[in-house]
Image (cartoon, rainbow, N blue to C red):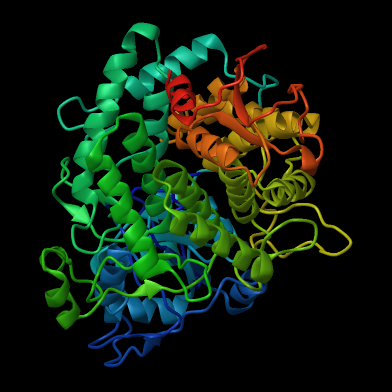
Length: 636
């Protein structure tokens, strides 16, 4: 599963403003603001008071509009600039931005006269979220009427700074240092990371480990699920394996402080370089990623505190984010009162909290977030044997298939997307289906996964023969090209975390199906991930890219249970097989009544009783008839 989407370690909002043009004025107005998060993103006007920059006693309201096709044509007609406010409904600093900055009469006055103000919920528009994810939420982007970026600002901007920036760009609408031209990337032809580059990436990851407090990096503290998986399953060198296991355990133990002790669920991150100052938003990417990480760790380390952490996250998902129809909501707000830090509130017990109120739930049902939840629930079921978790995963999958399906195997983000389709929705559901196949052996899920994989290859393949792009770029007879963005000459771009997820998914699907198209698709994604300009651009994807690279260079552990689906011995063996299956493994159930295996690369003998076979490389074990023996062999 890819990281947040919320793809930064703190909430963000992006604001687009269209300004009226006037004479240039030299001014140092391009400095970046502090990194921070914003929360409430609504379409309601923002009221102001006092005296506006124009001298009026009532500046009125900010007239927010949406991101639409005619945006820049309108800006040209009205001789204005555009401001884009991109935020999230769960984001504390987005709320603060509303309460302070967008209620300031000077800001309101300038926006009303000189800009078209656009407000977007980044969770609802993955195309914009992906484009500006590096700027954090809230994110503020200024454009001229031709769609040229003038400034990109990260996090909360105080009223005085905002008013000065808006006014400066009205007077001098030329791009500042924060909006450099996007460099064209020449992708490598290699479909694997070279040894020298791989060693460099490993060193970068290992060197950022905080040996004192755990976790990677020393500013914001959070548990990175992909880093945990890499540390548990891939040692950078044989003699370092034990040390890496200790570091994974240290981080997971420290990260328990980010789990709500009352309601369950995991907070996104902590500030101040420690684990004691959390921001309290609970977004699906972190719930799903850490449910999977703690479930895997509970089995691998046989540690009850990790089991309890996984159970706590599962409890939150079911009690707070599960819709009555079976699908999952997107997130819970960080604030019970928008704009006010909730540390004292979250220190209360359940009854005391509920007397005050419950932070808002974002009740949007997105395919992407449900795919993340389904895959995590499948892994949790494998580790815990919690039948309710499996039932919840399957119910969510059926709901998304019924309400979000597109012709050809794809999925929309919401019931009717204004842009898209988006890669993240179909990719997360494809991974979810493959996870359900792994833990059930039910071939309907493999069929669904393949259909989604074929949709991705057809609609999201980059023309450069490297990477998958975030927004569909080719049409079908049933689906004409979607409107992507009103920015002139803009093209869909590949995202690192999505290509990490795609490379790992397609590689494993190839092993399940022996379909060379899926291996080729995995190599396509790896050509992007192996490009030095991509590699050195950001570090938060390193663990996922290292996992993808390692997996493409090796065969997965392959376990097949041979026996009828209604045979109790076969059921027991399959249950034992999936307990340790959350890593890079291929788990299958061969019931002869269902016909040949999807990938018949191993010929199994006829048996009088159910048995399991464990294969690595070109070698398979003798029949294993006892569940406990299979567990031990897999653990080794």
